[in-house]
Each structure stands twice: as structure tokens, then as C-alpha cells.
Image: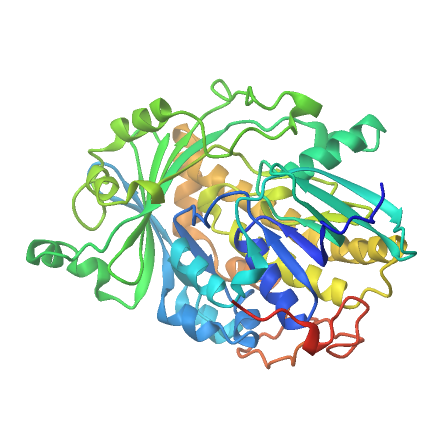
Length: 496
């Protein structure tokens, strides 16, 4: 493919997808002075999801970027997780060892913060030049070329549905669980028998979730009294209401601005699990039209079955749903999934495109952020723009991130097993986990999770507070402005 086309927009790094991973990656490219663009298929950034929990693992990065104060002002510290029985609201146990605010802050320097995802999106968008985010750009194909007609090193030509084309040296797929970038890449690799069996396995629908963020809930004197306890504390306690048959769970998380993040989850056992019918190409990896469309009938059935569930603070599930703006209600259908192939040539994927966690794990957004900063560091230090050097940098990224993502997936599955296991065995497992988990085991798990708390290696590294320090922090071998992909400051596009 020829790279000599004046109508193509050229950039050093092209990021596909304006989710949490893509936006964080854009901020890091901006700070690294590397030319980039973000293409988002939607006409606007739609902040899907309910809450996001930002742990001590990712907060050093946001402190380094000067964003942490904004996050603190718009979030609450997490105090723990309480399990309740529906309908009598009888406590089934409390999990504080893994999340206890004071202990977490003392050991790792930061409280875990919970906030509505729409608010977090707004903070990220404030730190990106508007000219760097291009909306209504649906990618339909991409092709790598070895060398341009001008004698320069190779690149990737990306084509969008509207006919526009982009010429980039590195392509980053951050376009979600039904990634177009992954679908195209995997299709080609599968034709050459280069995909491992793990990447060909279908996605199984073990869980359906409906989630959202309410409007402010103290608009009237009656609401102010009813939700007084809910918002009185500076801490947010995750409360989980479990149905009598243990197939439904309703999560409630108070946040700032008098809003509640909620998630309704429906678990399917082995006899109910099914393969997503729309995922029939390449062993179940072909992207569906959207990861949010599994039918309004299914949504209404779930809501109909649970509308009368009592909310731990006041009212019912139905009342919280009714107080949620419809466009902020999301539908999710995926089980945990970890793909083994993350990159090929000049193309690499991050976030949900390669590791999808169930919505209530709280880890999906954090893992995408960790992907972004780790990838930004290796891109900044790439030796040259030759394909071989870029691929070597991607391998360094993969070796760093894959084991961590695997650990997050394993932990998410274990928690899902604790919460979703049916019958009397499930009751015993929950009782032990939520009532008798030894503090030293919880501390050991937390220490492992906080082993790496990466910052941008091309910016001044900030000291990390807390008794337990990160084991290792990558230091850049280059100075700002001297990497092979960086720009001269006077050439940078300013914010519109």
C-alpha cells in the first residue's frame, strides 16, 4: 500500500476509542510531546457505566499529572463492602479487610476513591485539547506498509466509514470489548494459523448487568430526610443486596453530588449459560454491532423482577432506576475474558479490547489506566520507528502487563464465585469470606496488588506516600523532547 496520499491525516500515534484507556493514553501522549489523535466512533463521548473505583495503584499517576485534586473533590473514600439479604436487609457479612480506608491509606498512601464514571470522563476530557479528539470516526479497515514512497519507515493506513484515512506509525486499539481493531487483526492472524486456542474460544454469557448513576437525590425535603444517612459520611460503603435465590445482586454506592451509582446483576448458572449468537466469526471473536445491545425486553425483564427490592438506604430499586437519566443507563453482557494476543507489527490493543472484567469487579477502568501509562512509557523510549523496534517495545509492554491483567481476571473470577455460588455451599463460602477472612491474608493480597504503581517515566517522578512503597518504577532513558516519536514544542497543535 502506498503511503503517498496528501489527503491522509498523518500522526505518530493513532488511538482508536475514547474510553477511559484511550483518553488516559491521549493525556500521556500530550505530556510526552508525541503527536497523536483519538478517533471515537460515536458522535459524542458517552460515559457508559456506573461507578469507577480508583485505588492506590493508579492515584500516584494522577497526582503526577496534576489531576488528583480534581478527583478527590468529586469522589468519596471507600470504607468497605457490606452484603445484605433481600428482603429483610439482614447483614450477611462485611468485607473491610481488603478495602478498609484507614489501613489502605496508611500502608499505600491513598484511600480508594469512588466516583461516577461520567464525572471521571469529564475530568479526563478537560485535560485533552479538543483538536485531538475526532468524533464520528468508525474504523472499517487498516493496513500496515513496510516503507513509504518518501523513503521513510513504514506505518499503518487506517480507513474510516466516511472515507477518511489516517497514516500513523503506531496504532492503539482501545475500542472496547467488541473491538474492531481486534476483530480485523485476529481475522488476519487466524487465516495464517497464528492465533492461540485461547483467543478462539467464544465469549460465554454468564452475567447480564444493568447499571447507571442517579440524578441528585436530595432535591426535596422528603428526599433530604430519606437519604440523609446515605450521604452523611465522607466514606462510601459498597452495599450489595442479594435476592433470596442468589441469582440477582443489586449494588449501591453513594458518591458526591448526592448521587448513587447502582448496578443490577443477573447471574446465569451452567445450565443457562449460552454463546453469544452474534459472535460466530473466527471462533467467537467477531465483533457484534455494539456491546450494549442485548434487547430492551431482557432489560425490562430484569428490572421487572427486581423493582421492589429494598434499597439499603431508602426506597426500592425501581425508585433509583426511575431517578436515573435513561441515556446514563448501560447494559453489559460479558463474562471475564483475557485474550493472549495483544499486538502484532505496529498495532497494539489495551483495556477491554484484550482483558474484559465483569462490571462489578471495579477493576476494568483501573486496568485500562495501567495499560495506558505502561504503553506510553515504552512508546516514549522506543529506540527507533522501525517496525522491529516498535514490536520489541510492545513485547516489553506485554511482559509487564499481561501477568498483572491475568491476576486481576483471576481475582475477579474468585470474587464472582464467592458472590454468585448457589446453594448452601455458596452461603458457607460467603460467610467465611465476608466474616472470617484473616487480616494477614487480605494484607498480603493488597501488597501484591500495590507492588507496581506506575507513573509516567518521561515526567518528574513524585514520591509515593504510605508505609509500603512500590517495588519498582520505570525510569525513562530519554529526556522530554528527545525520543524518536516526540515533536519540537513549536510544532505542537494547540488546544482549540
